[in-house]
Image (tube, rainbow, N blue to C red; front, side):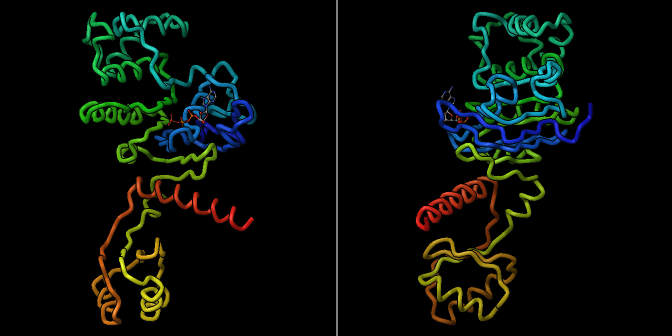
Length: 312
Ligand code: ATP
């Protein structure tokens, strides 16, 4: 059953009344990955995840799960999902909720229920009704439900939404432990700092288009350190620096800010600018994190689109 990719989509598309929610995406999720799925509200994350789980029918395109076509009945057994609300019965206990779901899945074995409750730390909650559960407990139960049948791929849509730091920490640890056991994850979240603590790969979706898929290692290289200066005249500042260091890699961000990459001597660069009479308002080294990279990527796409429009 082992396959390099647990999920592979080709030109996967979903249109609602002619409007593209997901637009020909080629998504690749490696076996053993924790794939962080990122995008603004309405970008198409949930729709993509629902199609992978078989909860929404693609308008076009192909989905392979462990190399098999997604409509193969085996695929449903390999996937456990927590998408949008967990669909819990509020007047039932955790175990009763699990029994209901196990019956729907045709699982007669109660061991699977005990195991999922134990893994998620819910083995001892007894008869307490779900309506009295904390948000974190409900999310853990959602994951326990997804774990029924011991699936290889877990798809979690916003699993840490609304959780306090302790709840987030618990879910993070749970995901890491399960990943250590060999389970592959696709996780969508708006909490990018948290996602960057666990993800091994990222997919960035914008207006239905998968604009980037990148491994953590590649992202770390891309999120390189830079030296940023804020000056009165970026054009002059750039030409002065270029004169002193001809091969330097620079990026003019707006009319006052320039970023220089692979710089070691920030003080030296400041001195050159000041000696040449530039007004230097601020300068310093930065490291781009996932959030900044994501926002840059989004802005850069917006700018490219605007320029395309202007040039049309
Ligand atoms: P969020 O982060 O807000 O959950 P998302 O990235 O998950 O957003 P989707 O829920 O997949 O985005 O929605 C993508 C687009 O498809 C949106 O424009 C949304 O309004 C639309 N859409 C989603 N589900 C339906 C539906 N059942 N009927 C019509 N349009 C839909």
